[in-house]
Image (cartoon, rainbow, N blue to C red; front, side, top):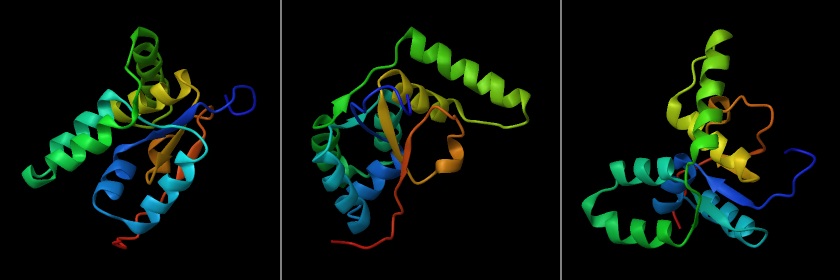
Length: 139
């Protein structure tokens, strides 16, 4: 994907979504810039993780923002890739979480760039990553 397939969007991992929703100025500026280049996206794992940690008074804003993103489901091939990565990296002594491998697989299978603050969670060579740094700066 790195050199052959054009980027079709930016998959926001949970760190990027939470930083945006909590008003982090640096993340907001980054996502506004990226949105001008290609669609912003989410997947089942990131949506579930964000809602898991959302406060009651944040639910309306969270739902409004997440539903405005392009949603990429997890299909059989994506699930298979995530499982194989987890197994392959485990064989090298690297433990990856299933949610992170699923997020990475969604990005690869759909030609998306992953936006994350946790680059170390995604050692897959095929994956293009933009690192955001939540600076706790509020708007």
